[in-house]
Amino acid sequence: MKITTAEDVDRVTHDYLTDIRTGFGYDVHVFDENSELWLGGIKIPHKKGLKGHSDADVALHALTDAILGAIGEGDIGTHFPPSDSRWKGARSDQFLRHANELVKQRGGIIGNVDLTIICEAPKISPHREEMKTRISQILGIEVDRVSVKGTTTEKLGFTGREEGIAAKAVATVRLPI
Image (cartoon, rainbow, N blue to C red; front, side):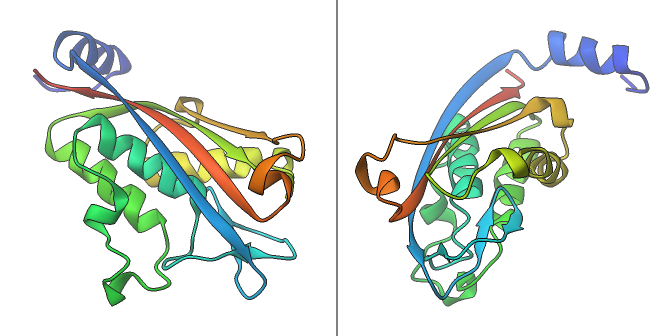
């Protein structure tokens, strides 16, 4: 079947990609005064960055794990082990692209992703739309299929003490049966 219109995409998605899966991802990184802050694929001005083997983009790491989980492909550390020097300082968009490519290799598509970034600072709302746009570009999906939210822990726990940032993500993937 040749797919040329939006209706064709809807028909193929409805009739062919009927194995609907959900994955969950979670990641945490500690603040570091000597690092840049990357969240959701964009560099954010802040007094501290996040410490990690790669660029420590906690948001993209959680999304990557959510997609990998949806297709039963382990976690980010399985595909990009911190013990491998090739990933030292690597941009996390590579990890998210890889997870998306694994979905495509199975003939599937990402239906949507939902991301929550947990921190007292920086505020997420001023950067939300840019993050959504960047994530949609990395995944090759419409921006309305990407949700980015920010929340705090009301000064409780390590994020409340501003020691680091956590992120949780859910991804829905549609695969052929």
